[in-house]
Each structure stands twice: as structure tokens, then as C-alpha cells.
Length: 395
Image (tube, rainbow, N blue to C red; front, side, top):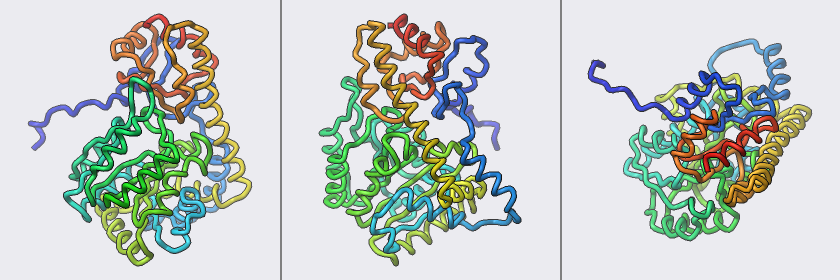
């Protein structure tokens, strides 16, 4: 059966990870892999997670299944974290299932969309996270792009974006990044969310928000402005969330998918179809990480500790955005990199050519993807000087 298969193309990020590990050069810097790193270049376990885990080990008395929707305490806590005081939450219009990571949330949402509208097209920003199109296509959905990032100005193509979205037909799906846009770092402003909500009403398309980095830009509430705004103004929407970054639970694979309906009865019907899709894809999600998150969010002391640790991560990223702009300016490279400070989250496009990216790698042991997307969290006091001098050399 399998002897006629060809080798699948390698994922560029996974390939970077393997190449970085095998590189013997002491000065090497990993700016490609999308995980948060501390000043020592380590992706550690948050102290709040360690404390919650100790409690869980002591209390746990079963490993039985938790059901297709996952842990109820986690789902309720994530809904409150994502939607805040949105009235729809109190009126039973929102239902949530916890999933194997944000990718799992996207995948079962794609199954839900296909069951509701098999001919629907999912419109994704140009550019978007590399796995977005693949996940939707794997579910049998068509994917198209709408204008988003302007590489010439390192900013949002706002007018072109709204022009494209004004052409999206009814019952298609528009994917939106809540904050910390991956890969550009260019986020929507409040006025853009208002315009998108108006277009969704007029055109009849479904908004699907991916919120993988809540708390990594400006804070929990500000980062959730977009999905909360849409939830207050639209009859339907989807929201995918992830606990990989803001709780550091990468390998635990903890995410959630939330559905919003026009009323509680409609939401219940949609959620039943979602659960059916979950049953067919992975049956039930992993429990461990979700129960840790629920423990943290439902305990005042652990939540306070988490908020402090989250602020440390966010402040470190924003600090290195500012410091990098300062150091590049001092190096007199001859280019304006001030856009890096205006962007948000872990990622920005450096705006150099694939050939220059390759030279950074081969000549200076600096790893990033060919598009020049860099992970700001990979910088530190120990390596920023090497990075700046290396960039100056290739430019």
C-alpha cells in the first residue's frame, strides 16, 4: 500500500530545530522556533504550574476519561479568561470544549464548519501562521487569502484588507488573529475590529478568531478586545485559544474551542455537532494540563503568581523590542528598524532577503526562517550584540 508514497515536505520550523541542536558553534542563536525563552535561553516551567502540579499529584485519585468536552472547570475558567464580562457568556450563548492544543481547536472547528457548510471557504490573512491553511485543507475546506501585511511599510494594509473582506460571501469564514499576529507582529486596532464586525453583519460571513497569545501583548483584557467586541455584536462566531504560551504548557497540548450562537438553544445544537466531530477526530482530550490551568485560575494565590509571571514574559519581550531598535540604530546599519518596537508579541519580519537569512545562518550561526520572521524572545543580553553585528555584516 505505501511503497508508492513520496517523502512529505519537511516543516521548515522543525527542520530549524534539528539543525540548531546539531550546530556545534557556541555563539549560535535560535530566533526561529516559536516558544518563549528566558534570559538564559531556556523555556522553563512556570512556578505557578509547579505548585498546581504538586497539588494535582497529591489529590488525583483516578485516570478515567473526562468526556469529549474535557474538564468542565477548565472550560469555565477559559471562557471567563477569554470573554470577560461579555453578556453572551451569562446568557448561555457560549459553549467551550478543551482540545489538544490550539491546533486541535482549529482542526475540530474546521470539521464543524465542513459539517455545517461543506462548500465554505476559509479566508486567512496574508500572511498567517504556516499551519493555518494546512489544518483547514486537511478537513476538506477551501482556503483563500485576504490582504493583511505590507512588507514595504511593515504595517497593516488596512484599506486593502477591508476591501477584500467586503467581497467575502455569506457563510464563508474569516480567520482573524486576536493579538500578537504570527508571523508579522502587526495587530488590528479597535477601529479595524469595528469595521470587521460591520462587514460580518452586512456580508453574512462567520468570524473565527485564533487567540494563541493572550497576555503576551498588552495584558489579558486588552489582548482579548477583538473577540470580546465581536461576541457582543455578532450572532455567531468561533474562538480558538491556547495555553501553550501564556501558561508555558507547550508539550501538554492544552487549548480550547468556543462556539457562540444567537441564543442558548442554537449554541447547544452547534455544540452537539462539535462534540460529534471531536469524537471522530480524537475522542477525548488530555486532562493533565487543563486541570492545572483550572487549578491556577480558580485559586487566588496561584492566579496572582501566574499574572506576575505572565507580566515578566510580556515585559521581557517588549523590552527586547525596544532594545533591539536602539542597538540597531547605534550600529548605523542604514535602515530604519523602528517598526519592531511598534509591533507586538514574539514575532516580527526582519525584512531581509532569504539569501541574507542564509548568510546569517551559515556565517554567524543565527537561525530563523527564510521569510526573515524572527522570535524576539530568542534575544538576550548575552547574544544581542552578536545578532546586531551579524546583521550589520550581511547588510
